[in-house]
Length: 404
Image (cartoon, rainbow, N blue to C red):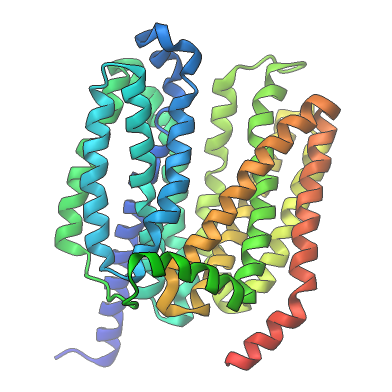
């Protein structure tokens, strides 16, 4: 006969297994966004007539991902997320098959756009984790799934480079199809159905996101803060390659790629950040994250000729940005439990707009002012995030008291 304690332990173990499955889903699917990046030279050799347009492949994938977040991610509030995940997985396999057999660059670009749209499965997995977990463990649940997503991002380029080098670029897409089919079988057996929380039609579902922005100051603050911090994070990475290529390093893009492995510290820190958000409150963790990211750019400013300094800065930067993201998402999922997919869509669209802005600012600052200019821009973005976070605190606290 089971005791209440043993039943609780069993439920905890079951939840842990589901969260690990969702983390795997997030990691395996989001990796498809980054597989093409180390394969660009291979694409150029396969389609020499379109060499000038090779950059359209990763651009198409990124644009597709942004469109998928806006057009598909909100459906998790209207329909069973398990069904959406399976349908998108099936569609993603078809898109990958088209990419693997693409006879021309135009077909590959079209397939890449579809891959980006359908790879937004991770944006169903993260809200699903918040739905499954009890409120007191929501931050840890989101952190666990985000760690899987982050590992997928970090390891995708390494895996694609290895498979592409030994088996060709088409095999990369084929291997992903096999991984997704195996994952789909596990999903059918292990992942429960979710309960839809909205009966709105598709058009009204999309339109309701604007109303959520107007009605929820917490969502606006989290989205603005997250966008600024991701802008600071994103301006660093494209410039790192330029820095390493010059004096005194003379290192190629492979070295910049290895810095992504260093970023695994952020993935490992994600569950811990979630636990801290559960115990201390997400605002305290976000304050710490802003301070860490500002510190990272100070370290970078003194490390323009030091690999060790750059490594330390990357670790601090990655831990800061991931801790902030987990805490912000933990906050927004508590605002409207019946609209978690939609509030997540608003947050992530703003997040990626911030990232695109940061990338553009970083390259511009590098050409105009050099490495120090990049570091100053990074500090400026984190300072803006800090100002938004601090200036809205009285209103956020009042709102929290009103809803408690």
